[in-house]
Image 1 (cartoon, helix red, strand yellow):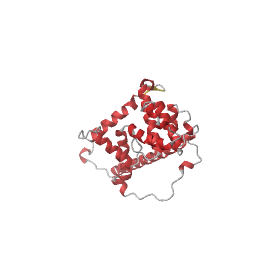
Image 2 (cartoon, one colour; image 1 turned 90 degrees about the vertical axis):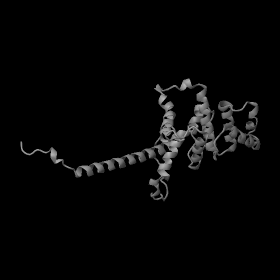
Image 3 (cartoon, helix red, strand yellow; image 1 turned 30 degrees about the vertical axis):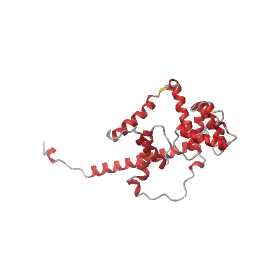
Image 4 (cartoon, one colour; image 1 turned 90 degrees about the horizontal axis):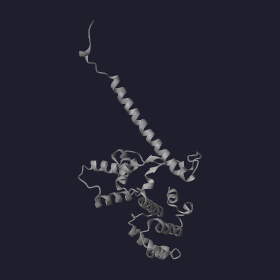
Length: 248
């Protein structure tokens, strides 16, 4: 996914970005700042250009993260993913008209996604809490960090993801579940072909397929429970004798 985003931004070598190499990471950060983000003036980017003197670059990068108001991520992947997403948002704001229609389809549904989430969450809180308050947003970000939920620019969508995780893993229904033991199934090393065109999409598509299977199983469980309820009702009907007729 990161490769595709870098391709969309026009990075010259999106496939060759090595996150394990600190200097390569620094070079990618510099490219994003030079070409897309442009938070600093050219003169103020001097430390970020010190790729041959990594100690100086680290000092400049630490300040850059603060100035960019990046959330406190621990790994290079999380940091770069956030910066790439930030760069894409800035790219959209530069010329939003070109993204109005994608493949002939109106994108108004995508635009309204945030508004729908805001209305839904505001209804839950019954207007007693301002969901755009700084303390509320900070609380959502802190909880997301604790539960290891990736950053999202819309804190309300991130809150929905947190609610789902709490429901699935921490909620009362999950307390009585037995811990899963054993060796996980190596679904990422299967021989079946999931993505025929792009090997980079193979791993996320396998994950999406497993999530879809889980959703189908939950749906099947609900269907079975509904059938049992209907059978219980029809197996013990109550007859209203007042509606009956005797003779002609």
